[in-house]
Length: 262
Image (cartoon, rainbow, N blue to C red; front, side, top):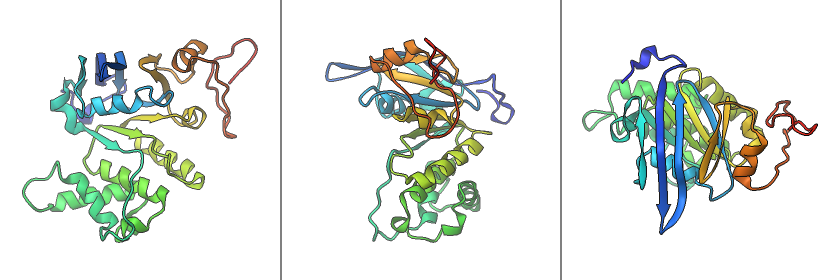
C-alpha cells in the first residue's frame, strides 16, 4: 500500500480489471477496465440504466461481480474499502426527525471510531469536514430543515469525516437548486486538491465544465484519461449523435469534427 501522505499524481489509487456484473441474466457491466490515479477527478456519464450506479456499488463492495477484480490503494477491494467514501444521489430526511447536522456528520466516523463513544479526534475530524463544505455555521440545525443543496453539502461532510482517499458521488446535484450547483462543484474542486473524486451523472455539459477527465459508460466503459470526448465514445455510449449545450460556461467537450466543436 502506498504512503498516503506521499502520493503523487502518478500513483494509482484504484485499478479495476475485467469487471463484469449481471442481474437475472442481464449484463449490466461488461469487462470494465479502469485505472484511477491520485487526484483524478473523473466524471462518468451515460444513459439511464447504463451501469453507472452499479459500478459505484461494485467499488463499495455492495455487490459481487461475476468476474474481474478491484484493488484500492494497492489492496484487494475488501481490504481497501475503508479508504473510499460515498455520497448518494439524494438524501431524504423526515423534516421532523430530531437529528442535527452535527450528528449526521459524526455518523461518518462510526466505521473508524474505537469504543462506544466518539473521541475528541472523531469530533475534530467531523468539525473539519463541516468547515470544508462551509456548513459549520449550521451544525446545530435540524437536518430536515435544510435545503436540498445544504443537505448535499452535509452528505459530503459526512463522507469526508471518514478521511477517505477516494470520494464517490452518484448524481450529487440531482436534487440541488441551480443556485447551489456551481458552489457545490467549487467545493468539489477544492477537495480534489488532496482527494481523488469519481462522479457519475447524466448531465454531460454541466459535469464537463468541472471535472478533469470524462468517461462514457453504457455496459462497457469508454475512457481515454482526457477531458475531450470523441464522436466514437459518445456514439458507443448513447448509440446516437449527441449535441452539447455548455450552460454558458466556455469549454470543449467534443473534439472538432466535420467543422463542429461541442
